[in-house]
Length: 288
Image (cartoon, rainbow, N blue to C red; front, side, top):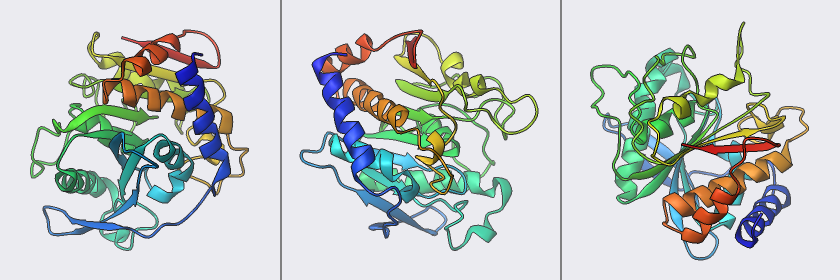
């Protein structure tokens, strides 16, 4: 691990342990969806000089503040985070009106309204259901109702950062849907990240990496011993744990190197990220 990579790892580890696990923050911003629906957005500003802006989409039933550990690592590294509260959240006041797949076009509305508000380049990031959103902003073509304007790709999204995206057979994703991904991407999973139901396989989360065309700076990160929630470190802080803090710090560190390298054009970060490529060990990072 070189000096830049080590510094970012220590910064991520400190941010992941020094601040509260769950701090319910009020929304600082409201944007209006195309349908006229008000969308509450939670905002965390970068510490020091801003390196970039992250549009973050949370997992199903979750909420932006349930990713505080990850958000703190990103803001400490100089990124501002903008995260809408989606209608499928258990904390959304109108959740009952958006049952089942009705949440999918609503999520697209949310991020389009927020991207228009940001009105400039951003990093599309998300976890689980939100990772699907981040990949679609980067060019993947998941089916949407006919009233939703396509393509889903937003050219303002410079890269996609996808924590544990759903694979084929999980929900409404078909083989080939991830193939049009048009931007650099980091796709993360863990070898304990097994989807529910019979025959679940953690490798299914790597489908976007497998389907993306080679040569576009797509990375796959597999973390040893990591489940879908980092032991309650993200998405579901109510889980008994223990929180997989060290692995989450590694994921945060590599995500910062990735964003600096491919969204910010930082050559030192790219060299550090390349130096972390490995097909063995507790953090297996590959590129195609």
